[in-house]
Length: 452
Image 1: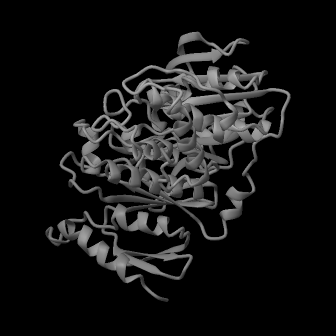
Image 2 (image 1 turned 60 degrees about the horizontal axis):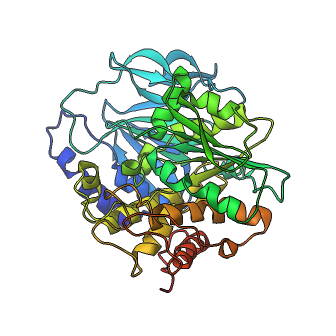
């Protein structure tokens, strides 16, 4: 077996602070960065071997990572009785999802308020041993082996998920295509204010080309992450404002306090979009397993319509942003954009998402034209999109990705629609915005600015 030298070197570099601790200190493991590199290389895991005090990960390309496990790295598996076992101890929790019709064994794992491991929203009596003075660098706490995946749970409550080798068909068999010229089309967009920005102008664009029998709904919860939507569904608690378009393609508010379950059951949705909260959009370790659980939830609630699942990729912040969250990316727009695209690539390969809506790349395309207004960079507050060309371009991207091919229409066939902001949409620039969206859909992970 060959060993990736880069992986081994990076492991020692990123875990040097752990290695320097006293011999009795068990905070050891493998870094998130090292495992994410393997995900970026589209590797799956063949097996994980346990030896005395250490683990050995064997990847699909025969490369190997070995690392000490110590006494405080747990290993969670499914026993012969189909119960979850933690370090061989029976938890009496069945390896079955709480979501009907889901094939997933693990929908969530975390540490509860008493410091015990919790699996699929059910607490165990097994202490996780996570003190308040955890190291600044997240450390590995639990390796979970399920039917189709391996999960690596870290002390900052983030998780990296790998496919088991030869389980790729488990996802590819579920991939769906957009419908072709349906009599009606219903699209539900689930997210926060970034989803509101992206969908705000979509009804006007649809109406401008004479398309009828299309319904757009969005459930907007300010600052909400994938985890918040998942937890809200499990608790059946109101999470945000729900709006839907009427026959005149105008937004109407149904409720200011709607649950995710209510939104999913409101119509027979053909397409359902999700997004991650912007500051974590470049951190794939915040996506799973809750995102796959949300997909299972959506498909279960909309069994009749069998919805296509889409992912709305958000944009990086403006260069002038001073928000603490931006610090995760070194206050660097290019670094944040790259992190978002890297996380999205991995997510598309490792989940049941059918189609990508690359809004983030469309905005980045536009930022590389004369229309950009640095340091706001086509935002109104360094984060949310400008009411003019920002929102318009985002809505164009949704139209191009989700509607144009369904009804065989061209975004370039849509007429000028004014929109006012710091950089308003004008008859001179609206084609540039459209082309930024088209280019993004053609090359979603590469910046391809339109010609001014």
